[in-house]
Amino acid sequence: MKKIVVLGSINVDTILNIPRLPLPGETMAMGDQSTAGGGKGANQAIAAVRGGAETTFIAKVGQDHAADFMLETFKKDGLNMDHITVDSKAGTGKAYILLDKDGQNSILIYGGANQTITVDDVESARDSIANADCLVSEFETPLEATVRAFEIAKQNGVITILNPAPAKTDIPQKLLTLTDIIVPNETEAEAITGIKVVDKKSIINSAAKLNKMGVKRVIITIGSRGSLYYTDGKESFVDAYKVSAVDTTAAGDTFIGYLAAKLDSDLDNMVEAMKFASKASSIAVQVKGAQNSIPYVDDVKI
Image (cartoon, rainbow, N blue to C red; front, side):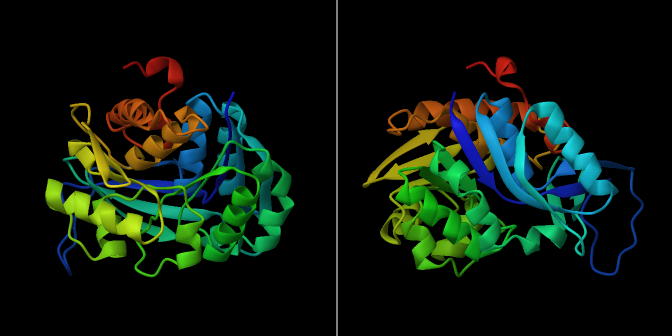
């Protein structure tokens, strides 16, 4: 069984169902609202464990009911919680998701305890990172903690996957050079490279620039169009599975968690793993919510 470590965020999501995004100054009635577990790190960790990997999560929660709700969810999925710690001052992270009638979303984040993760927290998880097959992280937790985790991973021959989300324009060069695989969407790729992703040529150009910036393997996810894999001047496109999307909230996180769970240590099965991850993602977007939409491996067939 693959061993995955995820360093990342935990949020309790409040989903607000609206017909469309409101205009500035507009008051709009909601159709419905609901609460579910979320956070990019938590979503990716749950996707990895449901994808069949032994998964350890490095994260922080507050001392509140939201934490109890999230930890109970993790326990049910068999996620290793040895490195989930409690911050007594900051609350558990929260996200407010504006979900329109077409399944597209805009998200507001309160970082809370997610922003209190330190290098010391990472050092406490050193053995788990060193013994993993793959380490995954994103940008909803402090950068210095991610850099240290990636340093430990590379010192021990562990594959590193970086999801540069939320989008940043100033990723430290050191982090890029420690990254084996970077997985942005179109918006995030544009923020990093300055190249607007609008067609096949611009997608390839953006991936090539990420290559030159120090990341050897690039996957750019392109929503309903699929994803591009690029390395050493060669590209492969993986088409998305055609489904009717209800909620795209956890689509990218599902893709990344399943990708990590399915990758071989030599990365030779990259395209095959991307197809499997794409299938899992296509199932997730057909269900409202984040973690509750992530499928189990037995339900993902290609």
